[in-house]
Length: 197
Image 1 (cartoon, rainbow, N blue to C red):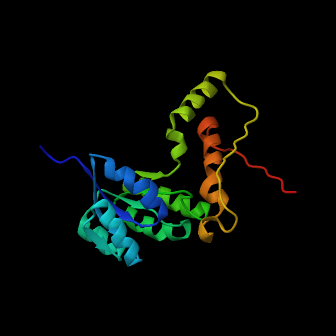
Image 2 (cartoon, one colour):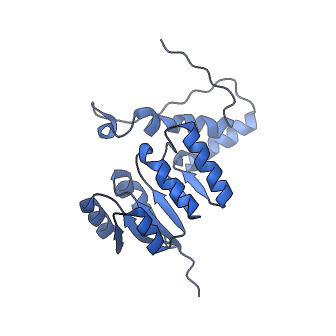
Image 3 (cartoon, rainbow, N blue to C red):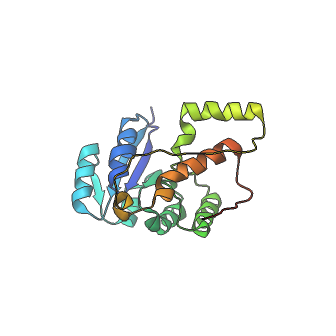
């Protein structure tokens, strides 16, 4: 019988990788974690040891060439995503990234266009869409019809000081889940207006 596991290469050995994504992937019978890349060798080796990943790299291009994955998890801060994702897509690799998908709309557009041209599947970690309660709410919204006003609130405890040591801001990291929940419930945004006081 042919092995039907999806071969994934992993870029990034930080907090989200170790606490959320890689533990979930390691539990899946149809996934093989074939290689890991990180520039910080201590993190690289401790993460690879934790998840039983033999192939370890500090050069992502070499990793992709030598490990021949089906897809890549790119778990980096947003200002590092673009070049990595573009390279992966040019290699016709499927890509998962965390949100936000880019630091500008133009970056996001370029990645989406290249993915479509290359026939690659991509996903950004807007995971709240897959929570059963959210899906049930969406069905209820569809039963009711057009909504006139929606409010989304995202609660998360955080101590005082820079968010994730200054690597990312609150809106891009967490509050964006509330924005995506509104899009999931009501469809794509057609117009934006704002006021600051």
